[in-house]
Amino acid sequence: MMLALIYDVIIHISYYMGGYILEKLIITGMTPLKGEVSISGAKNAAVAILPATLLINGICTIENLPNISDVKLYCDILETLGAKITWLSTHEITVDTRNITSIKAPLDTTRKFRASYYLIGSLLGRCKEAQVGIPGGCNLGNRPIDQHIKGFEALGATVEVAAGDIRAKAKNLVGASIYMDVVSVGATINIMLASVLAEGTTIIDNAAKEPHIVDLANFLNTMGADIRGAGTDMIKIKGVKELKGNATYSIVPDQIEAGTFMCAAIASKGDIIINNCITKHLESIIAKIEEIGGNVDANGDHLRVWYTKRPTKANIKTLPYPGFPTDLQPQMGVVLATAQGTSIINESIWESRFQYTSELNNMGAKITAQGKTAIFEGVDCLIGAPVTATDLRAGAALIIAGISAKGRTEVYNLSHIDRGYENIEEKFRKLGAKIERVKE
Ligand code: EPU
Image 1 (tube, rainbow, N blue to C red):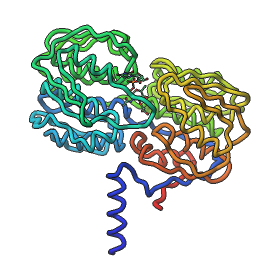
Image 2 (spheres, rainbow, N blue to C red):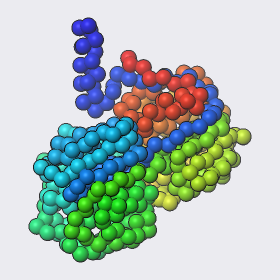
Image 3 (cartoon, rainbow, N blue to C red):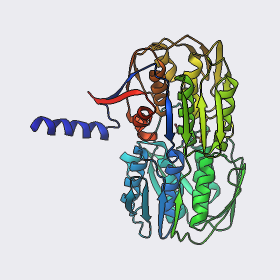
Image 4 (cartoon, protein in one colour):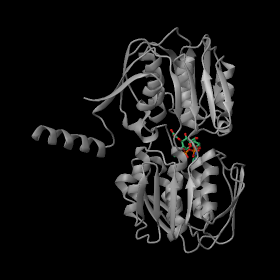
């Protein structure tokens, strides 16, 4: 009894220190995946829509929320700011934001993930003031927020970054024309959030076009905003007096999760059907999988992906949507690690997104990564080994590697994976993978 209590305390301490450091996945590989999998709501849409509820002076219902730790963190933060959250099921909540009582987001929680910086845009929009801890998240190299700040300042706010937090304040927010110097998902979202209730019209030029940008705009419009052009590189936001809410919104399926299973199907020599996805969002990955000799049959909201022959080499350059997504680069890297010939991946978004390659090399891959380029000399097969997830997508890649490899793989540092994938091992297990999560 006493031992169980001590164990429980250790688990909780490790969770609050930033991860389930006492858990690992054990995978016995060489299992071709077979069967059907259903895709959850998009993480990167959910973590934008949750803070957007702060702009509503009313109640809204959100459906198809992914059951991941970033969503739980966000709900906790919203509650500390005065929102009332009711869980209707594991994937559905109502959020009552009529009574927001604080502009200060809890610093310890906001530091745990990247998307906490959307609280700056939404609190600024709602309360004209925000104080948020410097955001954390995956270590992918330098992650500047100059474009976010440029946008807030253009709307009339003053922004101070000091002593571990970001403070933004405005007497009035007034619409402006803002040209993004780099295409940034986060800055596009943050400026949308800050400008929905501003006076006049805001134009975001050179905006990001990712499906989650469109999803956020659809959510805000459903709640009463006036946003046009989301999904193109020019977004026009006409400020409205109030968002009344009183509506229900369902989050778009996660195109990165769908792409992860597509890579897993090919790497494991499998044949799977992926349900509940928007195949239009997957065009760049479908094209790449077909280019290397994989088979894809896409039909609106589902697709079949199957292996018939060893993939051939390919070159990939990650780009903003609709280009090949950086968030699928490590998963595709696993496929190329055993492809015929030498492939090159050029990572143009993040400077440190090749950390997974040394883990794959521990499994017998032959990858040389330098700066933003990695060269993959295809080997016949990967060999199971203990590996560590260095970030969220690296973690997904290592699971795919473990399922495809000969022998036993252990994947450590699961907190990264749990931030963004719902029941990942259960979904893989249903497809036939031999994978289990164990506490050490
Ligand atoms: N950038 C700047 N200045 C800024 C903002 C960005 O120079 O003010 C640069 C970045 O350094 C990067 C590029 O612009 O080189 C793109 O960054 P972006 O702002 O688009 O990235 P983000 O908003 O921080 C989101 C996703 C990431 C995904 C990127 C790119 C969320 C919560 N995160 O990050 O997702 O990799 O867009 O698509 O939406 C993941 O899900 O694993 C993940 C890391």
